[in-house]
Length: 116
Image 1 (cartoon, rainbow, N blue to C red):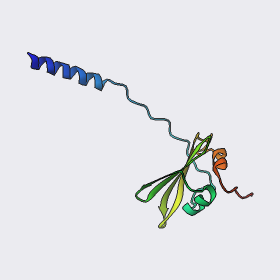
Image 2 (cartoon, rainbow, N blue to C red):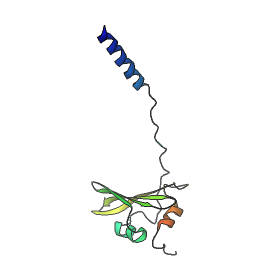
Image 3 (cartoon, helix red, strand yellow):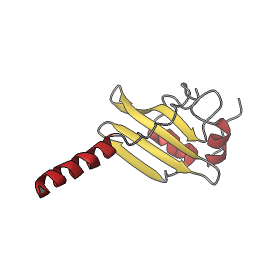
Image 4 (cartoon, rainbow, N blue to C red):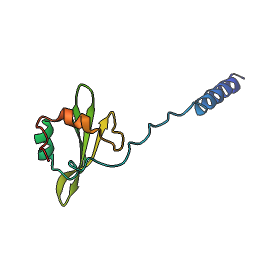
């Protein structure tokens, strides 16, 4: 009798777990990159932004994070023709029309962007 009670309780617990609400993922960022960053080498990003606050390496891919007072920037590199190059730039908060907020990137720069 105890065994049947235990089995019934275990089934009740499992059923409660199965009906728990799932966590929704946040919306994907808008597509697109700031044109002036796409394809830059890591040395060029380091010159513009300094040493990253955090680096992550996953195989041939890298992610560098820069932390500012009001925002964070994430620069993603992948190999192209055997050399690392920027493939994606994203900020928190995000930009209005692309994944990166240009004001955030401007605020994080240690070297001013050249005037065009």
